Image 1 (cartoon, rainbow, N blue to C red):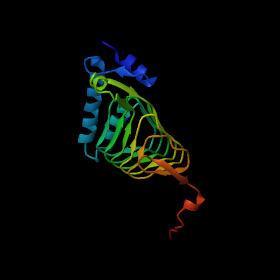
Image 2 (cartoon, one colour):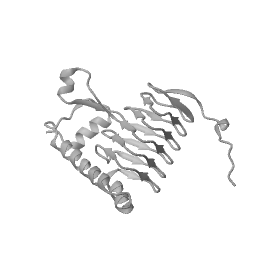
Image 3 (cartoon, rainbow, N blue to C red):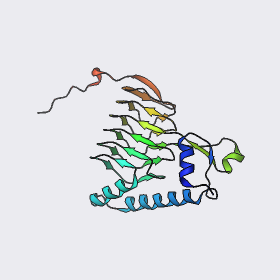
Length: 201
């Protein structure tokens, strides 16, 4: 049997590994523990803010001050997720963190978004045997990810970028860029002309 730490190290290095339940009971145990914590979090009413914050802090690897994560929230291990300050994760955020997921400061993620580090073999026999690989995801500072966005393994999103609703992000996105579509492509640079001219009395 392969230990959890060895499988995670190999996944983090980009190797293809067999990580089915029979290959590593430790993986199954870790996934089960995380699922229990997510279930506990999602069962709590919004009014129990301190308990919710406590569970989130114990669930993820690290998270800065000023975060809001709405239920339902789901992740695979939790400890591979590292989030900066002033984070907003809207309803139905899923993070499959078989590899590390880094999220910067002042990041907003809309409802029904998925960050997926894991991928499986295309070949039927290999896929059924449990062969999988993972790639890190990195989201910079001051990023807005709109509703129904899927971010796939190995993607980096630069500081200040905006990802349009419904996008499937398969390649990295430069900083200060508006990117949209399936597959997601850079549309244009975000500039001062995008400022909204409104005044409040």
